[in-house]
Amino acid sequence: MSARLDAAIVGLGRAGLTRTDTRAAAELARLAVIAAADDAGVIATAVDGLVICRSGGATDATLGLDLQRALGLRDLKLNRIALCEGASALAAIHTAALAVATGMANHVACVFADAPITPGTRMRTAFGRQKTGIGMEGLRYTAGLFGGAAVHALSAQRYLALHKLGEDVLAEVAITTRAWAGLNPDASYRKHLTHEDYWAARYVAEPLRLFDCAAPVNGAIAVIVTTRNRAADGAQPAVSILAYAEGHPGAPDRSGFDRTLTHGGAIAGRAMFAATGLSPADIDICELYDAFSIMPLLALEAYGFHPPGQARDAYADGAAQPGGSGRPINTGGGHLSGYYLQGMTPVAEAVLQARGTAGERQCERNATILVTNEGGRLDYHAGMILGSAEQWP
Amino acid sequence: MTSQPVPESDPASAQFFAALDEGRLDLLRCRQCGTAHLAALVCDACNGTVFAPEPASGAGTIFSFTRTYIAHHPAFADRLPYCGGIVELAEGPRLFAPLLGDVPFAVGAAVAFEPQRAEGRGIAAFRLATSG
Picture 1 (tube, each protein chain N blue to C red):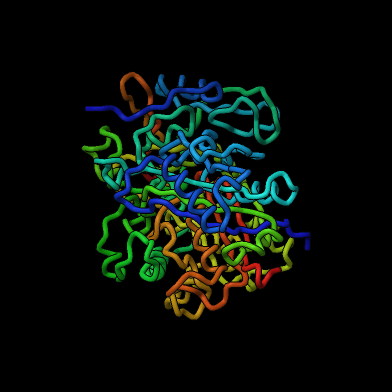
Picture 2: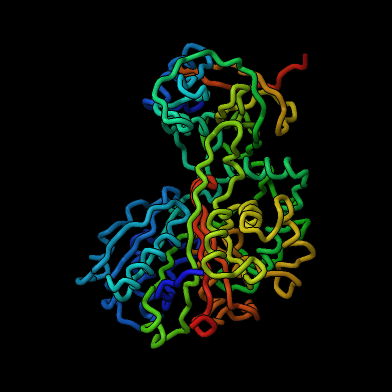
């Protein structure tokens, strides 16, 4: 066991989060930071640290260090861009935690914003922009593999083939996640998803169908991080950061390695469980990065919840659904049915669950919540275990 | 008809794309440890920096694949749905490649290199290998 960082999440702010909002990412980011400060009970100008999440996958790369000026912040001790692809949200929160724990700053805002939907955007092409690319990685476009769905379909196809599983494994993930979304007023898709609906949907890239892919939105999410002492006086129940670890397997593209299925959660999970003395059995809720339905299955196996090829057991007979017999997974509807704001989507839901303010979908046991972030094509991974400060003072 | 996009080469892949533009599939064999690469300036297995080009056999297997139903690029509009995937060459390296033919593909199926051309550039496509 190792000492915990003296840091807690005390504010959560959201802006946009709809499929009709067409405001620019920078404006949404500004509004989310202001909302997060308001939620934390601090005036926005008390924010003295800013960490902006950057991802190559996000459409608006213009969100930059000058967000400070838009927010009217005149006394920043920290202004930084966290660049770790889809894992940038947790990486940013960890940077913020280090900053407050070492006294570098007192209230650090971490923000991710994206605005893939512009007037006239066809939803199906929001992230599948035309590219040519350079070098060997550019060959994906020669092969016709545009967008995240195509490359994650390669992981899904290989996973199903190696473990001799059917596409129903993916269906259960999509259907479970939709069941949670039905209880979340902020989710994009809340209508009950039947097995018939799932199988009737078109393929995007085999074996991934429409409901196996994230719901793009325009929006922003920000959190405020401060020390545990300051957090105790906050306007909201504080959320403790129990552990953080990254895991980047760096699997080469050649025989003897498997870049499509090697998951950094194996590295990060070992580190976090060793640091906390917890084990997978001690995790009450999982908030897993699920831009595609294959991703939570791979994360559950990498973290040791299930042996390879058996993560479907987590979803069997509705076990991970509201009221199910197992561990709740992606209780806000995740990316699949909720909203796709990369690594901040599972963070936001974990904060609400840890606070006990998740409304109809609030889980009874919420002492330990695992949050995962994935970047690239399973290249970059970050994990964090959050818990309510009341239970983890 | 618009052609499939072909990447520009970078220093590591210059040899690979130059050979491909001439219809050949070439490897770079690390002189120090023997690891076969398609593109490399430094061998990630041994940090070696000297490579010998050699022709690949053109034989490989499907590491994974997907059939795609949406054309994000006009070159693919009239071939929907089409297949692309990752091919593992017999010598070890893997690459993204178009998979040709309407036959059902499978993970692990044997494929063979089939050079194609698009606006003067070479493309490394693969087709299911005929048995025997």
